[in-house]
Image (cartoon, rainbow, N blue to C red):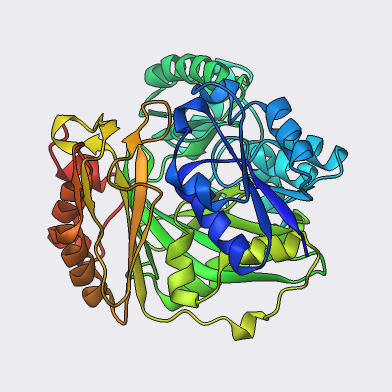
Length: 448
């Protein structure tokens, strides 16, 4: 097992990793930007080093500075958390070339899965259903039109290196397709330095369901069941839950089995998530693999009782999984609400600033993962998420009621948060009945 680990991240996930390491008897080295200097959670690390100015490009994305901190801190491994460099195959490779273990998959697996077009090819090879679309990247308008005519409009243009909705366009006819193709390529090049795009059949009113995976270096690959992440705004997840409501057992079992085949095909190790869209007839199609821990991992932890961060560390250290697929059981229902420093009454405008007072809810089955506290200043430089409120109860109805109660108790004074918006979603009959799709929020709520 490792003696010292550097955490190449900040905020809530950095604190989550520090806590797991302390329970495992592992020393931690934290890094921080000038924008995070003085953050209380840094005091829980054994050492902490400043790696640059507030801007991410000069700090949390600065590979040279992070490696320097790792060498000064004499660490054996780096945990990248999520976001920033967590899916950067080059950073992964640099870590290993410096004799520092990267807590995640190999650079090769990460690079192949990071390219959505290559990942689709791997899915086909593993007999995992993919959305009908182009066989490869689109080179010309004529090629795009031919594919669209074959699979039928509407179609979805997607960036092969994309994420977060960037480089993505829906086209309902040939004229729109030609314009959208140029727009998608331009946006993809600006966002990812890769203008490659491909085409898929547009699935109307899809659900977004993902399967949590763990895979060790001894050939053991298991799934930890699914999470439904359909409650989104502009392709950004707001609420996640497990199990996925109204998903037939046959579809759930087939999806989880497909996820296992996918990771075996990719020779994948460590934690990962295989993501699918599900149509209104409960047919599922592969989207992508997230080669890292997910923001919503606590949902799976609550229903399975398995600590995913500790599992990641143990796998990276070469330990075999201490359980088999038959040992993993999902019990009850867990729901997570992302608490963002945003004003939902002003089109989710960011709301950084001083938290004057903060009251965190508690009670049976309530968990709040956050690095914030009264007196903390939410910086304007990073993602607006300041915490994750998670509940776990025997049934979905009880979980919804528990979350409503917990949200009503949460008090964050001095800044606006999304807590009130989550309450509106939880009260809506479509959410209560488990009838949410990825367009539910925009279709249902006035977000102007």
